Image 1 (cartoon, chains in turn orange, green):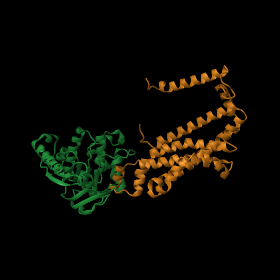
Image 2: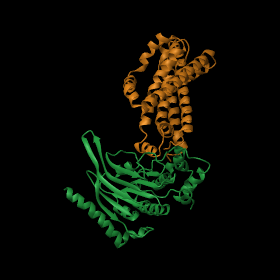
Image 3: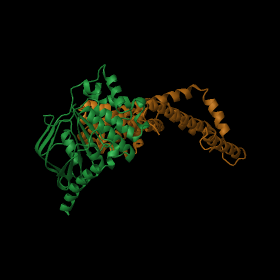
Image 4: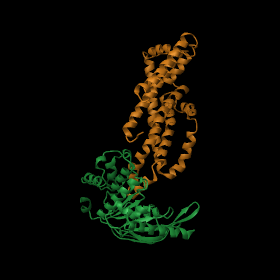
Length: 253
Length: 266
């Protein structure tokens, strides 16, 4: 019974509907201050207004671009540095302590500095997104490469495999499952980085829009943008999961 | 059968003279092998039995060229050992299959790595899968197979380049006893039929007796030869030989050789 689709999809849906209904009722009876928390209905109305505005879609497109460029740059660099770290012990000794040190620094603190360096345009947001999503990729790539077993390495030696053969036929596919988990985290973080950088200073973007709407006390519209960001985040995650299923066919539960 | 006839690779000889090996560890030097002398004839099936710490795995890796040795001489098929020789097939306790390759692609791996993949390879892979009884599962993924079947894939992979020498490092020890005995017999018969020189490391005395022509008993700390027992059971070997009087006698000889050494230590 606990495995049916009706149960697994129906239960969370009814919990969601109940909570939203409760929220709506509390708003109607005046138990919730609409300036602080607008009712679900007001948020829906606000959203339906937003989608008719050009600036909303311009902001969406801008933030998406920042996120995806940052993601692409961060992941590419992360994979390269991770592969070098996992391959060359000297590189690891020289570089990895810094990676770990930076990993434990709250990287969003760099956003104001990037703003000074790269200005109010898209670049400072792309850099922030790239920096924030670089680290999980490096760390997971290194961990993935380390997860390749000694027995498999010995087998490849006994087969007379060259370094390149061992890398492409063993290390790379062997590391990809764990490395890809880092890439998935990176996508979520890239969106976070772009929004935070927009908060710190920018002229276009969903983060900028949220700030401005809050300023104008358009709280319902602000909520609508936040929910829209949640939808963007979920969609991106869904797409990357599809890509993972396509690339890592041997992952099984 | 084409597997035997299409290449010249019959068994090769292996000889070790005065071989010693000491590992350098954080706690100081750890001698693992001392003065090992062995002469293994072409096509012979030899098992190495002994307690943990007797260096039996290290011995196999020295012959495979995967580990260096300090003193003595080693000749494998008339040459010094070297890793990546195509005339050596290596099998480990774990099957070490690549999860991203299906069964037949796993068996094909040695062809791909050695650069010997050609138009004839798919036919050879099919023959190998047939030999180990895996034809019906050729397109399945490794994780869809039982432990015993995974080890058969590893066996087919080790046999892929038709090596003159098979080195097996406890390949059956992760299997349950029923599957184990079944595979013991099959591998023993296969080694017979293919005429390969086969070296098996095991800590099971009955497995060693069931499969081998010769058993080398090794003592521990450092590893050294404490007994050489000839197994004169008829071939082909069969499961029901385990109950025979001769089987018990030989097993006891091995046990006595190992026990005498242990008592000597205490």
